[in-house]
Length: 104
Image (cartoon, rainbow, N blue to C red; front, top):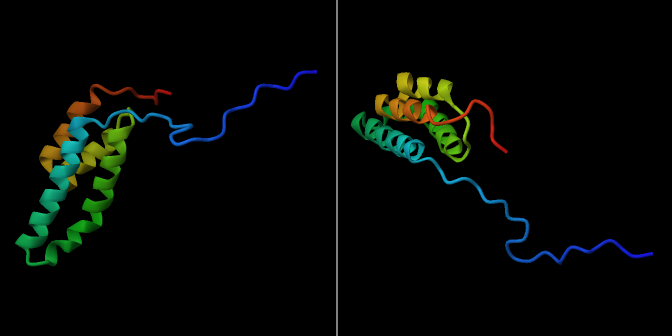
């Protein structure tokens, strides 16, 4: 009776699953959001830190959305309305190149 073939011992980089390259428009939207948040905080002498309550979570989700290939239309519309007009438009323009369902 023969034994099944053995996997080689784990080495550096073993089992690495390549991630898709981040989308340029999503990355640009996230960077613009960080810059606008900084300007709002500085421009209001620190009182604009309240804006971080919605800027930071939305910007983090934009960073995550840049890695996958799904549409994030709701996030784009909320960014358009509550954060930054330019970032929301960039995300909506990029959504036209994305699919409805995840690609595995």
